[in-house]
Amino acid sequence: MAATVARRGSPPQGACDPGFGPWHGGQAGDVKTTWKPPKGGHGELDAADRNRLPDEAFAFPKQRKEPLTDASHVRTALARFDQVQDVSDDDRDLAFANIRKAAEHFDVEVQERSWSDLGSRPHTRNPSS
Image (tube, rainbow, N blue to C red; front, side, top):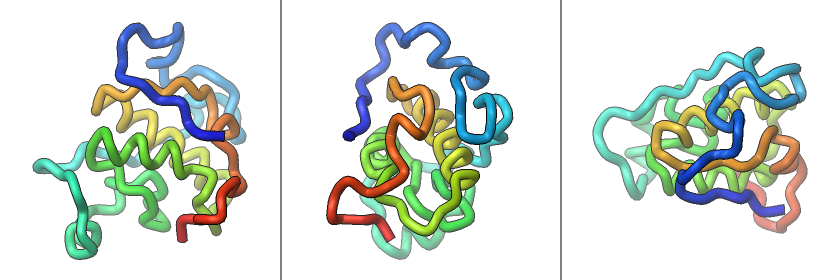
């Protein structure tokens, strides 16, 4: 299932409330985000740029997977969420909270209410390592 994202217009009721919706680990408010807006503008990231990013710039900070440096990267993280391998459900809880925080910062609407709406197993043959 592909992620459903759109530019923000009128978000669904509760969509901007970080405490809404059931998640694996409980309510969304139970997950403390680690994501912080990046300093400076980012677009295309080469390996050197990515290596210089702090852990808190990633959806999955411990694994340094899915950088969230601009709206395009947020949409990519949503679309590829189910392709990320070797992460726990707790890691997915944190990543989804980080994605939502970055999405709000970059004005990207997230319609999914939990990461389980995005999936946890790859549905494509192109897993993210």
